[in-house]
Length: 178
Image (cartoon, rainbow, N blue to C red; front, side):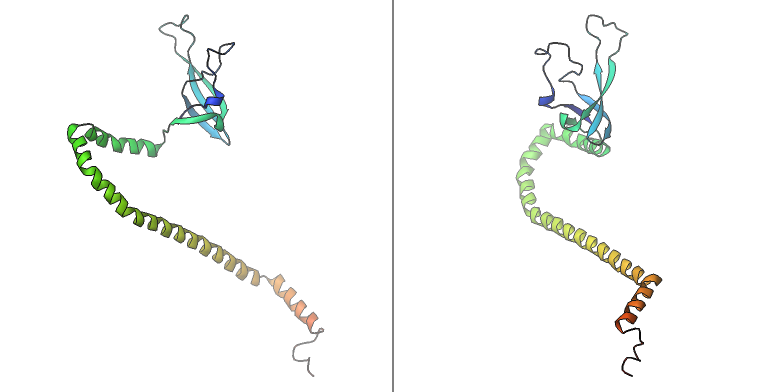
């Protein structure tokens, strides 16, 4: 991802009493994320006066809190795939034929969207219900398994037998009424 400093975390170099270590308006590339902090890389030039043709920008890294930055551009695989998939559409829509098609098809697309919306919401509700039911089923299965395993414990059976004998005064069930 490409990030930049939030407005509260940056200060204009015009108002600074010394040269800032981290350029306030420069985009930075996220290298690693650990907990609530991120490690970002940015390029710092050595200064225009001492710059030669063979000098390259210095690559610097700094650890920042997540709340101090906002995302400019996402660079994960899903976003890249979506971008590649939309390139032909963007190209087509930039042509006069594409704009004319969008003008003609726009009202129909909106109407279809309105008609399909209840079905999409119903599907979302059904998905949530199925997810809740599957979680409840897993918890029920865990409880049943734990009960069966506990009932097969020989120490528990012996404790139950001792408890039953103490209820009947140490006598057998058949000897109680004799």
